[in-house]
Image 1 (tube, rainbow, N blue to C red):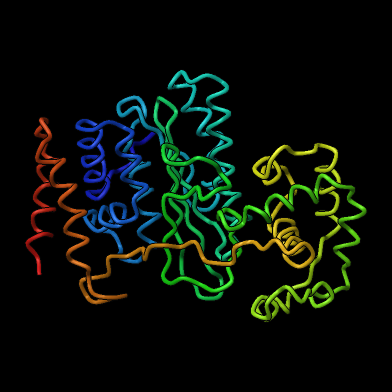
Image 2 (cartoon, one colour):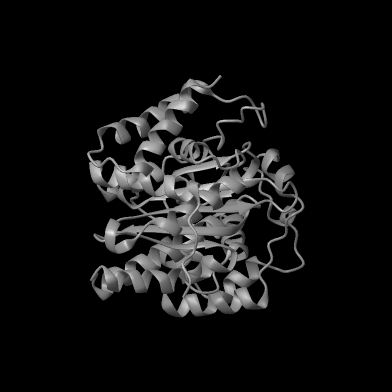
Length: 355
């Protein structure tokens, strides 16, 4: 099988990963990748495109191409498009290489699947996931970098996860969500403000599905369920929605009723419980029982330092310099003196001196 040529960008990515793992360990590399400012700075240092959608896929691709699980004790699964669907098989293969227990491997596969499902079902921001990269260590720690695209605006949104800082898949689990701009009326069932709505949703699916179906009359608009206790802002935002459950969703809810999930995470994890079911249960919670979910966009960060040509805005030198300094310090402290590491240091020095 012919060898695949490695680009200078990929060599530099490998060198930086080498130094961070050598100096601080695999967990530190996961932590830094879950930081959107570090990740964006890394993409800039690697001379990839400034814009988020291209930078995300190229940086993750470079790391996957050059990180060797046997050498680094770190594996990368998934990728863009159809590669994202290969993540479970790749996790299992690398998990065997790391001699992880079958339970640990199953947990990693579950973490990969749930991070994607939460960002597509529990956070409904009109960004369709098309990129999913799952990084994990020989000790079972992991981080996720995945990205969605808004089909109307063609803007991207990036989601960062880190196992070390996550308490629950359905309670504010993200290390960061990065977007061009925050939106109005984003359903966020991971928010603490959605806690009551999650409890009502769980109670609804544990109850007889026939009762739920009566609440979800296909032909009934939200105005039917409007209560004086609810403010007009909510009605204006969602007047065009209908509480609608398809036959497939109702069938999934009937199966869910038979299973009797113990908590909201177990509910979300079930096959067939997708965005429509999550949204409908949240709306019933608000409009019938007065327990609102959060409709505030959870995105916290702008995902770009900007570009040297001022697109989409001028470079934030202070933030970027801080990120680069973090990289530079790791490279300066490295004991190994390979040509790639020297090239990386020279590249960083030139960037910091530019402008």
